[in-house]
Image (cartoon, rainbow, N blue to C red; front, side, top):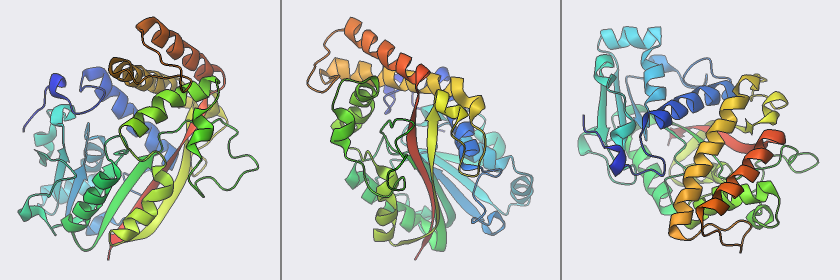
Length: 323
């Protein structure tokens, strides 16, 4: 298995042990939030899956969860299922993959996959690639998913917007996710949450990423030859909203309050350091932050806001069938 060292990481946060632990906890929180007792929603019939691939697999949390299922273990022992995992940076891959007969390889999701893999999969899974893909990258990735699948195969995607929203953002407004938000509204002003978005959202905009992926992905899937069989929108709570917000099926998120704060603080620390180095850190917009002390003061203000008021981020999963 090819392994990328932390110094060669393609991601803003390198593949060190603390980051691997963070991603594993994030996967657990996501499962609770979506109400999945299984690794897939009920619309996916795993008894019909003979070949699956986890694209952008990261720490392979989903893949390892899949192979831990008794029915999948039984199919694997009988040689009735093949499980692949790939990522552009294999530095996050655990060393135990071979023990579970998982086939790992390095792959840029925007580049064509090996010919021998095309048209051979029943299920393609990918998660939280919004931080990696530009609009052109998404177009290429969706074409590749379509190419990997057998006729009538399924792709399962779950994504997250790169925009912090106040806990009360959806009170009296249109249904959440009904339309793309006006980003200028969330990048103007001097509140702590605006400053948080001056890091989180501005980083995405500087990288030409799709900030509001949850409201755009369905049309992108349909344009790429998929029919969306199921989708569910939810809110990932950060801080105090973990006690008032629930998962899409009413699951409690209270146990994730501490992790949600640690997660956001780590992400913002890495993104702000990257922006500071590149001379693009502004908070509020137009106010250039050019030294580390001011950056730390910014992060402290944002952290205090997250701990006292909290925020939410839109998330959504899709299961779509190849047409």
